[in-house]
Length: 368
Image (tube, rainbow, N blue to C red; front, side):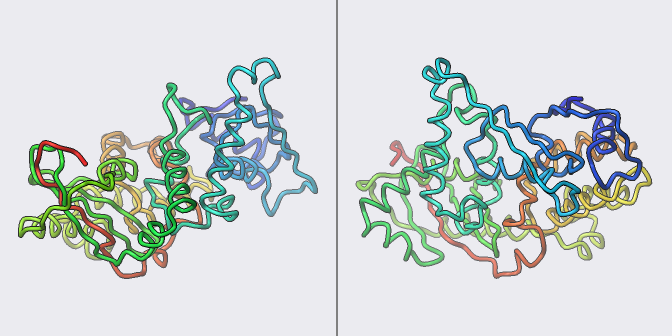
């Protein structure tokens, strides 16, 4: 039996019946399941006790997610077996797959510490960063591109090891740090990095709108060399900063308030109502209901990007089948957002809303 992103809900139901020990109506029609990464989160397969990794992801968490599908508390097996495939010697000499995997895992762990194997050091990550860190389907990157996550990890490690004074200065930067410089855009703007509890968000003004940017785009914008000239802040900076603050405030969805005011954050409200309307469907398993409850939590905690919410609403428009709606939701929300080290409960975002740093990007002809 096989499963991928193009497989339907009917195939997924068969998988649960044959491989999930908690299935309501267990069957024994299949003994072997071949799947892409899509089943590494959210589906339990613990009627099995063997995992064969044909490709080796460089992020250790990927491996743990896969094994975690069969290594469950209520498994009847005393032993779990994991087998990893590497290319044959002559092939590996050309593509250096094993060496690339080892180098990337080593860089990842060295930068983040040994606990990075479990990704417990969430202090330096965000939803977007975590999603991007895990987005590679193979360790050598997609379409021959370099891995930006490895580039930044290596860059930070180099500062830590070879420029300790700068590293200490960075660590001691006060909250609300702000600066200004010329930037090659046709209008002035402000990029702001926010934090609330363990949630991190980056917003950037763009004329009369505010856009959320991911970690890598934000890092590229902030990148400057030691000779970049610092410019003065003016009153326009504060106008842009306030716009970013309002956008960050709007991230946090309050069920009671939003349902009273239909003219509020309509996209979030519509998605919330859609999920509430279907979450107790008779077609759902207990795991399906638990999954939708977690999605509601992510929505309320601001963990879902606007782009994701809009895409979900677009793809579910006119759809009434609860199983198809669930499949659309699963296919559009990254499994990494459900990791325990990130926002999975209101307590994770219970801290104050904080501005960590802002940069005023002044229209100019040079890019630092």
